[in-house]
Image (cartoon, rainbow, N blue to C red):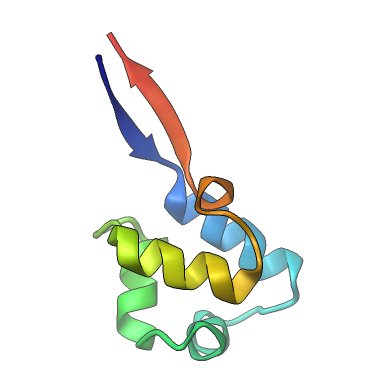
Length: 74
């Protein structure tokens, strides 16, 4: 049994807008992530590493699970 992590980009975008950051640049600075790296996460060209998810979740005061959608594969 395995699964895939989906939805990080959607969750990051949703959280960014919910807490009032209209620009990726400003949110990336808040998270202490390079703007181009954050943009890749939100545009789904790369997935954040577990370490990056941990860092982001601590900054946002949420769990890593709050940042991802896990789908069980058949």
